Length: 150
Length: 161
Image 1 (cartoon, rainbow over the protein chains, first blue to last red):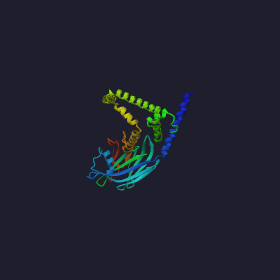
Image 2 (image 1 turned 90 degrees about the vertical axis):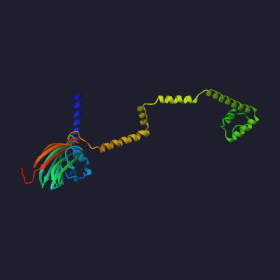
Image 3 (image 1 turned 135 degrees about the vertical axis):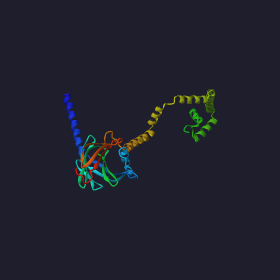
Image 4 (image 1 turned 120 degrees about the horizontal axis):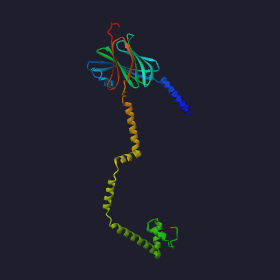
């Protein structure tokens, strides 16, 4: 009898948690801040707004300067996407695929001349960032830094 | 003065001696004392008792060294000097200190939480899949911030897969 009561309590708690989880997801908005940065070997003054970014990647890259080209804010709900323009007739589409274990699953696609040239699916921690880089532009390379919070 | 001053009132004489009477009462008592030997005697007795009491006190305190008492008390205070944790406890128990201290601590924590950049202890992003019309792809992790970096080299134009 006692075991039945415990089992029933557990079922109720799990049901509440599952319901709550669904509600959280359905109401959760994912805020994305996307920075398009030109990393170059040409000496120059680093953009002050990129201080956090540059200090985070200083051990990985050895560029002489970083310049912020654009900054875009996207608000994504469940399984919808947002698109931003990138230099060189490129664009980026970010699609949210769901949240689990404090990570949001994002599909990141890069297009050039409307043709997909790169795609990845990443599970990004809350209040964290991922950087996609490589495309050549002017005298350097583009770095696209995506910060997500939800 | 409510009572008839033709009657003797030792209590009134005592209050007169203690300078507790008003101006009118005082002058009436003084007039009565001049005419009444009995009340004059009561007043003299009060003066005598008071004088003897003062003399006794003076004799008793004559042998007391005030400086020695002061030194003894200060020495005892120093000996019983409270340890730092007792002092801290006393300081914190004062509401005046506690409220600003709590507010300051709360503000500090808030600023710390807001301004501190979160640094994950695992990779910021787990890469589930990656593909594209590219010549190479590298996945990196920044050593300090654990930020995940995906690097790809675009295929030069005109080169197919």
